[in-house]
Image (spheres, rainbow, N blue to C red):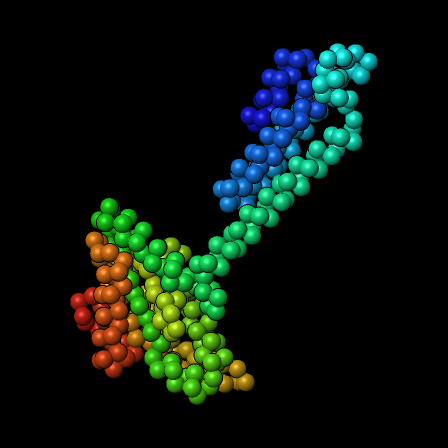
Length: 284
């Protein structure tokens, strides 16, 4: 809009329609504006900027075409801007469209690369890198607002035996299905991440201990009653152990260590259980 205003001011000063249609210097600012918008890495905003540039320039051209008189042009402006050719106008609209699509493609690719950098390729969950950053931000926000952040670490019991008995492709299928169930059990604002191997993490913000416990109980019941397909018509049952840590003022490293210690305690007590921050098992 500001570029269109600049063209209008230039037109008002020079009083020639050519200042609107053939002003290459100002027209190139449209390219810069679209490119600058693309740096926000927002695909919709990039398309909106391109569409706005096309509509803005189109409105100016429509007005200029009504007042353009090829028989009454000041030679100064003709020498400066050149003759108004319809094909040149069409090309400018095509250039704007191409620049918009190119910017959108670059933003789209950048978004894909960003997702690849923070996602686990096997399960599609967030990876450990994203988890650590998200946990730091959540704890800082929680400390400021005095809101509890809870971290749950889960580990599939005896998963190595599954890989040894059925093969790694079967193990991968179980990891994918388990990840799908985890995503179904949590809220949209909660984070599910694959910590590594058969270990997973859940991050709950602004959630009471009771609400976290209810999610874990529901997950336990669901997994205990579920069989996992591993191909060739075979199904297996699995269980998991878990550890929960909650804090308002811990660092991300401390919270992960607390949850990991609780998870180790669950394994030492016989697996297939979840240990809460008070070192007590989660009971139905």
